[in-house]
Image (cartoon, rainbow, N blue to C red; front, side, top):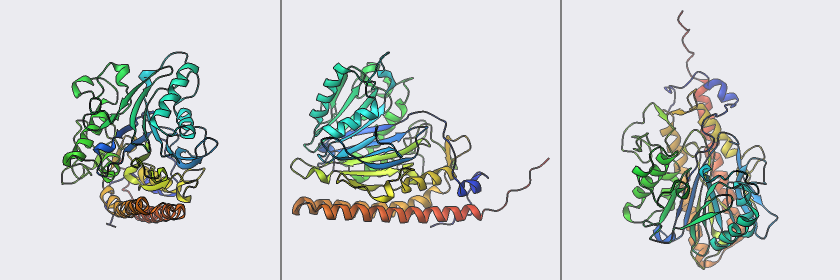
Length: 425
């Protein structure tokens, strides 16, 4: 790893190296999501993506969700199981959401966004099943204000703009609805704003999160320059996007031109933000393939400081992703992010980023290569749950080793910083 003795970072770094206690106080919710049809992907399998942003509940973990028709795994607030924020069940059904307060109806009651997703994972096998769940709860009532993205093992891929008593379905397989094979949402609903299904820039003036919506669309369009979108591109290019307020990626970032990152990067308009607490990219299966091969590539913590780890709904979760205080991989990512965050918590110091990316993405590339190769072999030869469990355990261990190495090197750099100059009076 490159030397970091020249980092230009706050004097509080030394204290943070010993105990990370920063509390983020910016936007409450700023999630960015996309549903991608298998018709638009490199291998013909659907993809579902979410960057989760919140100013609270920054300690996340992956948990087994039981008690329903289907077992599932999901990203949850650490130590909590009653609500989930993205997950997949053993039938290959995947779900995530983005908050959309413009769908609110006064006096609503019933299951909220996270509770509805838990119900869906426990009871739904297909997009159609989820639609039926929403139709049923339209009558009994919900307190939902969400854009739900879902994919299934039958090739289904859809988005539901969902209020307390109604919803609107957008089918990613319908070229009239999704001409490029994907549907993007941030924190507004097109139905609530009376917009087209895929609004253009001039329709989004003064709409909160319109900039992130456009940034995600631009990123996906760049990914499909060869007419298809790959899993690797969504994990790397979408979840880690760093763009300026105009939507142009910063030089030196994953989507930017060659060059050096600016010394400080504001994350008010980026997809990967200082409030991003986790991300997941779901890689589905083709119709006829075993639903258990549906993979939740999980990034605990801020994805630009974390590593994507494969997880499968097979009744267990790797230790490094599961902890009631927060999955350990995510806790390290939180520390790395905090050590490089500005005092106002709206931006990051960029000097450490290239070194972190070189270290972590090398391991992530290997995990993706090995997992995708195993997935193709299991499709051809049949699934061995023991092998699947072994792969997800070994992948998490490799990711944890990489994160621990990054943590120790970052801490050492902090402890060896030169003493600050005495203030002038």
